[in-house]
Structures are given as C-alpha cells and as structure tokens.
Image 1 (tube, rainbow, N blue to C red):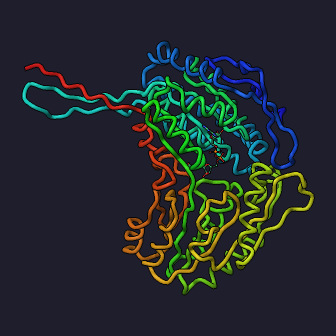
Image 2: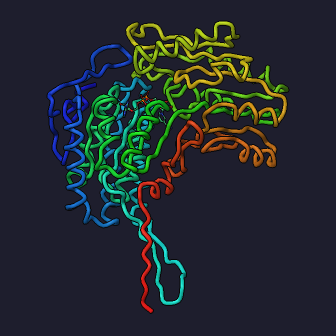
Image 3: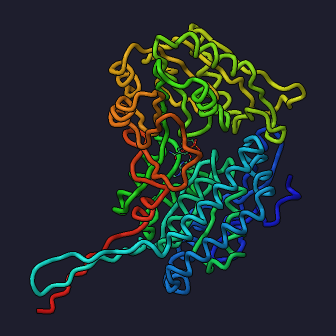
Length: 483
Ligand code: NAD
C-alpha cells in the first residue's frame, strides 16, 4: 500500500512546504486490518500549530487574501478534479489507514472530490444583500471570511469530513489549519499535496498531524484563530468549546449520535431492509450518523426482525482490502470498548451475528456485527453511542410511542421514518429530534448538498450544503448616510 503514496507521510504541511515537527518527535500509525505498523507520522505540538497559524495569517495578508471568489472556486474545482484522478490511490491509502472496506473508502474519495466541486461552484454565489432603511441611507451587508479557521477531524471519515469542512472554509476565503486524527491522517496529507498541485496559494491550507491533547488542544485554544470546527466525541467537543470560549470565537460541533429508524406497519419492507442494516454496519458502525436503533411497529415486528437477522447472519467480516461487508475497528482500544458494550447485552436476545472470513489476521481489531432484539428503550445499548457494528431493535405500539422512544436519548443527529402514509411522514418529520430526517430512505447517498448537524449532545452549527458557507463567514452590515 505505501508504494501508492506519492507525498511524504512523515511531514507536516505548513506554508506550502513539507516540514518536520519542531520537536522532532514522531508517532506510529497502525493498519487496523493486520495490527501491523503502517507509517510514521509527525507528532505536531504547539510550536508547529503556531507556525501553521502564522502561515495561514500570512496567506490572508498576501496572495490568498487577494484571490477573488471566482478564482477560489476554480482552485477548489481543480482540487476536486485532481482527487478524481487519484481515487484508487486515495481509497487504498484510506482503507489501510482506517480499516474501512475498499469500496467504502472509494466512495469517500469520490465524496471529497464532490465537496470540492460543490464548494468550487458555490464560492462566487454567496453574497450580501441591500436592506431598505430610513430616508437618506443605503444599507447593505458583506459576507466576509472569519480569517484563520481551525479544523479538528476524527479518524472515521477523514476524506469526507475534510472535504465538507475545509472545502466550505476555503470557498469563503478563510485560511485553514487542519489537525487530523492521530489514528488516521494519511489522506489529510494527500489532500494537502493535491491542493498545492491545484494551485492553492501557500498557507491557505496547513496540515499538522499530532495528538489531540497536544496539537488539538493547542489549535482549539489558539488566540489567533477566528473559528473552530470540531468533529468528534462529546467529551472532547466540550473541551474545544470551552477553549474557544476563552477567545470568544464561534464553534461548530459535529458530535455523536444514536440515530433511530422508525418502521411502521405500512412500510415498504423490501425498500427499507438494506437501509436498516446498511446504515449501522457501514464503516463497522464507526459512523456518527450510524443508525444504531431500529424501532419496529408490533404488527410487522417478528417478520422484519427475522429478515434483519437473516441479513446479519450473512454479513462477512474481513480485512479492508478483502472488501467484505465489515472491516476491523480502528484500534485495540475501540475493540475493547465495543466488546464491552456487547458484553453488557449478555441478558438480551441476540437475534443474529455475522462471521469472520477464514484467513483474516488475528491481530486485526475485529468484532462480529451483532443484532440485539426486544431491547428496552432505556437499556444502555439503546442509549449509548457504541461506535461499532451493534444494532438494537425495539418494538413500539403506535405513533406516539414511536416518537417518545425515538426522542429519548441525549443525541439528535439523524432519524428516518418508513411509512406510506403521507400525513404521518409529515408529522414524524416535525416530531423527531434530529438535524436531518429522512423519509423512506436513510442518509440520502451522503448528501454533500444537504445541511448536516445535530441538536442536543449531537452538537450545533451546520456543515455541508450552502448552510456551511454561512457558518464559515461573518456578516458585516454597512449603513451609508448620504442625505
Ligand atoms: P475524539 O473526540 O477522541 O477525537 C476527534 C479529534 O479530536 C481527533 O483529531 C483528536 O486528536 C482530537 N482531540 C482529542 N483530544 C483533544 C483535545 N483535548 N483538544 C482538541 N482536540 C482533541 O473522537 P474520536 O473517538 O476520534 O471519533 C469518534 C467520535 O466522533 C464519535 O463520538 C462520533 O460520533 C464523532 N463523529 C461525529 C461526526 C459528525 O459529523 N457528527 C462525524 C464523525 C465522528
């Protein structure tokens, strides 16, 4: 796999140059499929974050700050085109680094390109407005970049999250400092290489790999950044928001979820089935918007549970490159956490589990996808974000009970409703506590164009779509008195 990498993996990208960390310390990346060493990466620290923030500010004061919206859009579009020429390499690198099945990694690379195309096209279409005001005034608004923006991303979908966050920020003319996750950061560096090749001016994008409590904390608490976008766990999200509060800067938090799919008696079960299972086991359940709860109305409960169980029994677990249904978890620690949750369900009914493909390396971090049936809504498995291929099925009587159960967690990221009843679709869409609601589908194919984010402990602020461009800019009102 490493022979596919055309850029240095043991460096940071600062001010348009590949640099070693000031402290000279390095970290090891592991291949989760095999448990073997994959690559050596930089352990960036606060001095490196300082250098990156300074380079970003210099870019804003220089060429990047003078780049027109049209030209920013063209550069982003070129980055997207270059990503498309490298989909296979990026997919193989991501599969090795994250452990996700190759075809899923390929989709992520294509999605990252799509973000660049979308935000490239949008860059010169965001503008202020004129406001009718008192006699003798002309009033208008200007949409301006925040300045230097920080981006802290997790390991589960590096390419997609970088695409949506950095793509929107660059489109609005910000200069970015990106801190990828210490568990998987190779495609973040690849993205920097492609951005440079596409002509992004030096300093507009800086990438500093490193540990969360070192480089991540240094970035979120840095006095010279003007916005921070964080995707990750609730616990670290609170730390990031607290750090940002010291500098009174805006924060976007994309945190966890416990997203429900609600299936009514009248649903098209053939259409629902692949989404019910697929939306949980994708990326081995390590997806913020994983649908880890399925609520089924009692009239179809037994039939649908049996069909879901059949699917689970046929799920294959194996290496990322074998490209079966479920790959390994990211790390031994994550495997321990998820196995601990499965153990907490020892008194529950396991409806079905998948199986490991023969020859899969034992040192990889594999767990069996597991479907729990008849789970009480307040059980720990129905309340906690497990972040593994574990799904609970909960029966319900009627619409009111479905809403009560669906909304009864601290999260609110995504939800879906499966029913042919149009009025019920509308009622449920309003009643469900979530940033996105899907009707007779789930996830809508990724939805680059669709605003995404949470309520409750799932976070606040919106990324994706046009909405992100507003989040990555600041509105200035100009009131001119001319008599
Ligand atoms: P995490 O919070 O441990 O790490 C995420 C990032 O934060 C990493 O880059 C890490 O280095 C950094 N970090 C860690 N400590 C930090 C600190 N003290 N200060 C600043 N940065 C720090 O999360 P994780 O375990 O890597 O990812 C899993 C979590 O992310 C899950 O809860 C999942 O739901 C969430 N997630 C949410 C979304 C979304 O869009 N809502 C998407 C993907 C993942």
